[in-house]
Length: 227
Image (cartoon, rainbow, N blue to C red):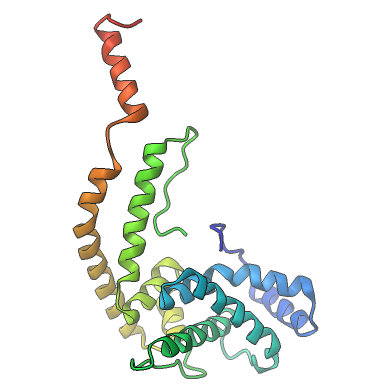
């Protein structure tokens, strides 16, 4: 799904795009997809914890949305409407995978990487890249291990950066419930990451390679052994 930032589109521009999409305007449909891809993917991935399944959900979301645009009444934002479709589609797939589990679909009208971003270095450092990848994997795995109600709130509120009200609207929750679940999700994440990060960091930050060579050269130079 790429790591580019989600394009910012004004409400008036969205209304225009939706109107054009109703007329099957290709450019408008492309613009809508580009503006919502990242959010929908994160939400679907948060429920299913599977990259391929999440991508299928996003595709199905767009197909359903663009073939039923007349059902969009504007009671909520278009992005919220798309998010609701994606969440319900993902939950439906989850129910079919686990028929004995109890899952509650979000009712109509009840309601959108990197987990850690590191500054880019002008000079590539393989050791640092490996460390960053290891840390990111730990965080992503910890998020995947959150129970679904807490995982959804965390992804929507923190990863996607939505405010309390938006999160509550999309997930069909009270704002107070969002706050409580987010607090609990953060606590569980801290506990999991702290438990796992020690061994990972020990392996991810070896004092070897280029850093070791630089130190060795500096020491030899100071000792007058190397020019």
